[in-house]
Length: 134
Ligand SMILES: [Zn+2]
Image (cartoon, rainbow, N blue to C red; front, side, top):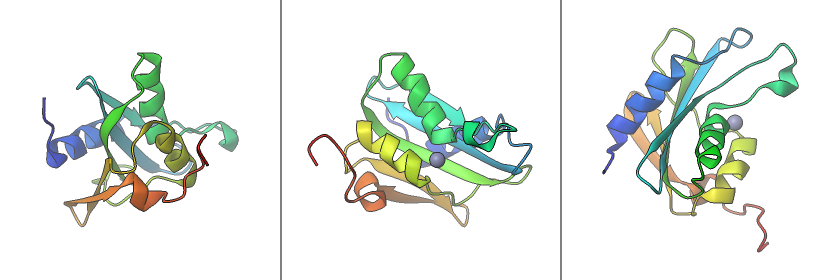
């Protein structure tokens, strides 16, 4: 099944509502398309010990990998203050590296900017990713 960017952003927004962000009050949602056509969503999950926090993107990757999916077609990410509509929220450096492990450089990373889809690629976000071929 083909997924359009608006639908992916809406799925990311839906996942964002489940964010556990009592410390930052900054909720993030992600929606990752697996090579099998399935969607894997994630939200940020914070912790009293800040080093235990995990981002929405890595939550989605972990869900997919736990189900045996290692290849992806696109990811959508939205973030913002809890209770408001999510908007521009590019993945953090750790998430870029984790995504680079599984995602091709031309894979779309769909963000929302001023309420509209804004697509980049993994190569745009992390042009010199560390990998086993580096
Ligand atoms: Zn992150």
